[in-house]
Image (tube, rainbow, N blue to C red; front, top):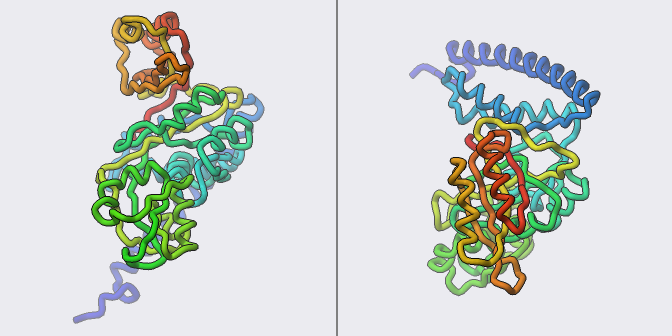
Length: 368
C-alpha cells in the first residue's frame, strides 16, 4: 500500500497549510478585537462603569449562535467566545473570582466555565469564606453551588444569602460526574471515602453496593478529599477528573453518581456597591427570599400577585427561620426581569404582603 502518512500525503499537507493560514488570520482578528476591547475599557473607566456585563456577554453569544452557519456546532460557540471575552476583559482589568477550593473542585470548573480562564483565582476553604471574601471586596465575584438535580438545594448557600450583603448577577450549571479516585489503581483496601457531603449523597447507591463497610468521611470539598487521598493510600476520594490530574490519582471507578444526568447549578455573586444589576437580556430570572406571618392563607396570599400579573415561578423552596415559632423563609425564582411592567407590578404587590422581602438578584439564565 502507498504511504499515506501525515508527512507525505499532499492533500493533507495542503489542508494543514490552509489551516495554518486561517489560524494566522484568526490571531490577527483576535488581536484586533482585543485592541477594540482596550478602547472600550478606556471609555468605561472614564464613565466609571464596570468591565463585566453578564447580560451583554449573553446577548453576544446568543447572537453568534443564531447566525452560526456551521459546520461548527452552536453549542461550541459559547465556550469559545467566553474564553475570547475573558482574555479581552483581562486587558481592561483583572477579574478576581472566589470559589470553593482548592484546585480541582467543581466550583472552580464552574468559575472557569462562566468567566473564562483569564481570571485571578481566589480559592476558599468553605462556602462562608466565599461569601465573606466577596463581601469584603477581596474578590470581585463569588461562585457558589445553590442546587443539585439529585440532592436539591445547597442549604448553606441559601442561609448565607440572608445574612450577607451580596446579590446574584449570573448563573451557570455544570454536569457533575463523580469519580472514585485513589493512589492505588484498585478498589481493595479502601478504609474511608473522603468527599463533600453533597458528593457522598450523590453516590449513596454506588457506595452502598460496592463499598458497604467503608467509612464515608465528609470534608470541606471534593478536591480536599482528593488531596487527602493523595497522601494516604488507604483513602479514596469522590471528585472530578481535573482533581485526579491535579493530585496524581487513578480513576478507579468513573461516573459513579447515582443519577447519570446529575447537574449542579451555581450562582454568581457580587456586592451591589461594586456592580449594577444586569439589564434585561430577554431570558432572565429574578430570585428573592420572603417570609409571611404565620396565619391561615398567608402562603396563598403571597402567590396571588404572581398569578394576577402573569409571572411564572421556576423554583419555590422553604427553609426554617430558626425562630422556634415554626416560621419559614421562602426562596423563589421568577421568570422575567423587574424592568418588565408585569414583573415590577407583581414584585411591588408581593412586597406589600410579606413580613420579610429581599431581592437576591436578577440575571440572564443559563441557556447554553
